[in-house]
Length: 297
Image 1 (spheres, rainbow, N blue to C red):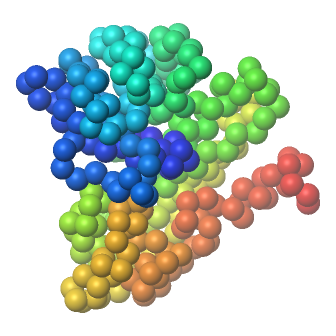
Image 2 (image 1 turned 30 degrees about the vertical axis):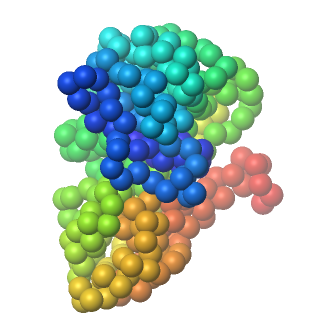
Image 3 (image 1 turned 90 degrees about the vertical axis):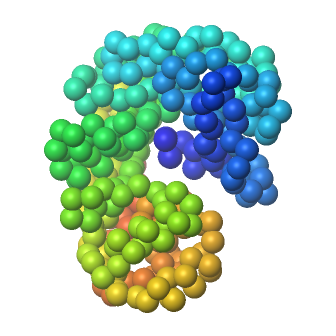
């Protein structure tokens, strides 16, 4: 969830599990502390009783808690957990579950009214998984969904910046990988990466990157770039060698490849702007910025 925020903070959420006696921090696999020195939990809605002292003792540094959903749902366990997290020595952040069926401004207002403003709070987060699931359920085209994901990021920051820096220009971006009717997410470990690459092998998929710009609390521009990438029909032997060489890094990219690295060896043809494939369509964005005097023309 909230991949953009977590990348920007240089952290990774390690999965937890709900047990009969409460919350138990994951005791199996978790990212290497040398690569991800800050690790924590991303809780679901209404998780029940949580032993925060145990969570902290097992290595968690922070926790993200679901606060609101749509414009009128408040998580019943949020307030108690929000108060208990810092007492256990963890940092805390709030999550909003976005609904496509309700106005974004109303949802932002509900979130801001419910979540206390505290100096120790981590940046607020939007649950991208719920947003993507809603977009698919509503049969929203992938290009529009990519813009919605970018909007969710930029809009949350822009509404806060309206009070602090009203003239600030906020840029948000996000990407979707689509192969026929399937929308791909980041792979879950090596096995997940192998399965994704096998599904994409010998086929053409689209990588759609959406970008939006906000000012004065409103979106003033958006764009979606669609790139087409065709994977060659590589052997299983090559696939295993590629996974060995890339290691854990491939789990950070949807499709399990980094085109700026060894991922280039997976492809037969690539059509589209390199920057857009990496996640930010720079050419249309720079054109917009020149028109608005942000960069020199």
